Length: 142
Image (cartoon, rainbow, N blue to C red):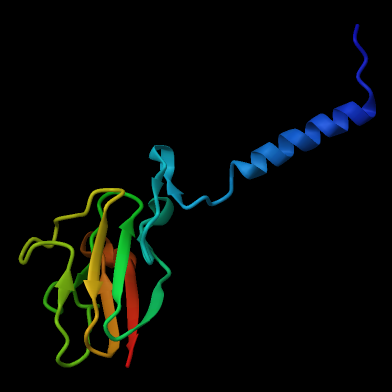
């Protein structure tokens, strides 16, 4: 029978624990495909019905990129499409789906961009999950 010293056993346990923790870190990739997270706002991180961050601030003229970390999500900031949607007076509505196709979603791993030209607060939603509270805000400063 082979005897293992207490020191060797503790070292092995420590290395195993360190490896397990390293595997749990956020490496800015999406799931098993390893698709890079290349967005300012993540839609559906970990399969959740959320935007991360929930509120994001930019300056007039800046472009925001949404990264879709899980399937069945979209971005909609067209007041007639969902009751939670608001945008500043004179601002152009935007959406990741075609006009009238509120159920159209963006594929996992894809992105959507919008450039903000009007200062104010924009409240947008994921149309399929707006009733589950998937609502975000972009604050555009002058």
